[in-house]
Image (cartoon, rainbow, N blue to C red; front, side):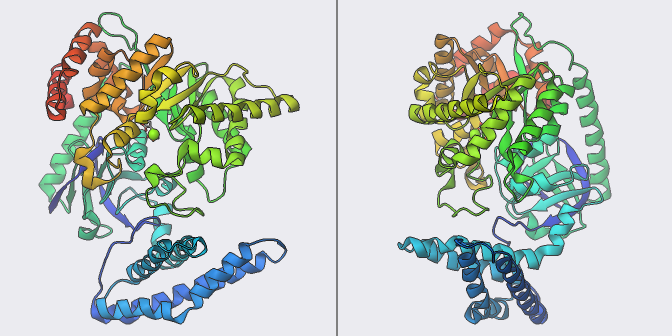
Length: 579
Ligand code: PEP
Ligand code: MG
């Protein structure tokens, strides 16, 4: 039995056999083999190259009708690399000398070459780095094909254990069989964590080396409440955790009973509790958990379902399904927030050195207008089906917001021309998730109908801490006084301008921050659906007046530690079972 400590990102207890999967988008773990296995691994490499060459030949042949295309050139480059004997020798030499697995030898060799290329000034050569990553993925697909298939076609209950799970992989799981997730990497607000929480799957991340210590089929306990993973537990530990799991679901049921009660404080201040979703079928869960609408629909997850770009109809169907599930309740559709860890790094785009500061979100949309307009058309068409509102992510400058609104107007004119109906007064809001937007909130407030504070990114950019990097996760905190001051500024500016302000980052799902945020003046929260009853319970147990006092006190404090301890104490008094 081995106990490993990580970060708890999604509550609950899971006990099941491990399905260990390697990742398509991240570095393959460094694993070695017995010396006697070397020839087997070398043969695997040869076969992977052979299959990859046949595949690219077929793809190239299929392009024969395309006259003015550089797709053929791309395939030619891939074939040249794949046929290069010295590349294959480099890989097999690594297996011979260092006893690496075929997949690690392939991955490390190609990534070395790619990073060497990307440092070269000549753009023609540096852009070849993307081709090398593509070739790496193709080879790994052949090397790991079987294991991937297992991940996609799970037929029994498992806990998924991986170095890192990309949002694409998480989206592809059969959710009815995945009972828990554990990863070496990741942080509290990484997108995998967000998806796990939304789906109500217990998850622990930042375990550092869990994949190196586990074999597929081992029994694993995932304790998503305490951030603990237990490998090969003994009988007594299993029994003990089965009892915890029962107690946890009893508490959940108890909380569910308040789902139809109003979200109102003891001194009668109404609070709006909305749900965050990534997939249309989660809309039902928001309703079932007593949510008053959808405060954040992360539409970019539509891109993670398939290899192809979604069509306008794909967008429309997803939005229509969501809006219909909500009846007359509001649905805030956020426009594509692709980039950073979502989609662009692993697809046909050149990997960026610093993706969180790169071409992501609204910036990506403003440079990919066809894609952006396709989505806007679909949102507008869906706006006649219910209370649809539109929100732009990661707005940093006024110019960016105005540009996005101008494109929206273009799309409206298009729809007018075709006589397609839409809500001409659709409310337009923006996420406040960069310090720049928070500091300029009073200016932005004149140009939008609502703000939604994205604390996940706001913390990342304020504290210069990558939200998905486990090595700096102890520095990532919503309780940092700098973050709280920015939140207060945004709320105050929204009030002065008389526009609505919500909090939709994970901070709104964390019980210890609710009283503080109410005290700062926030009256609307959007959170992971499974957390709705617990947060409502807190709202119903406090008075706005006591929240004001807490906020006043916290805003005099300068230390993150002092603030978080104070907030936890205050919450424990209200809801002792939380901590
Ligand atoms: C946020 O940044 O807080 C947010 C809600 O957006 P996302 O987590 O999708 O980046
Ligand atoms: Mg964000």
